[in-house]
Length: 127
Image 1 (tube, rainbow, N blue to C red):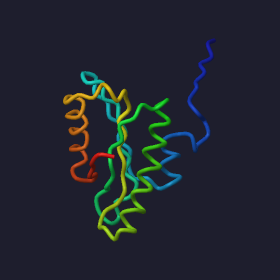
Image 2 (image 1 turned 60 degrees about the horizontal axis):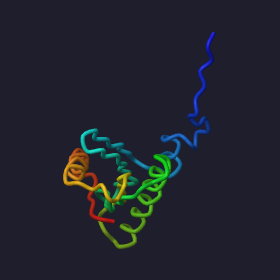
Image 3 (image 1 turned 90 degrees about the vertical axis):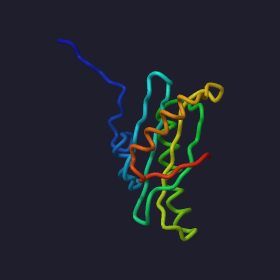
């Protein structure tokens, strides 16, 4: 008999859905495009007041988990910023994981297709 072990965390707060639940995030979109090397995460925290508003950060993260944590934290902050500014918008954030020197038109077009797939639920700009 073979025993299979995993490095996947078992603590609920370490799992993706546990992280979402902890701070009431509505949606996370994991984006990947093989031809361009795009790896990105779009986190939508709250759309009660309107579509989620938030910038896109391009950063070389140490791990996918660090990128996820950053996206979730920043999306939540954007919810509060939008509300404090009296905007009819919610909060979201996108992070693109990668080497800052390897930006390409194809990568950004692939990212744009993922943004478009949200059908207006997320409005983004540069970070």
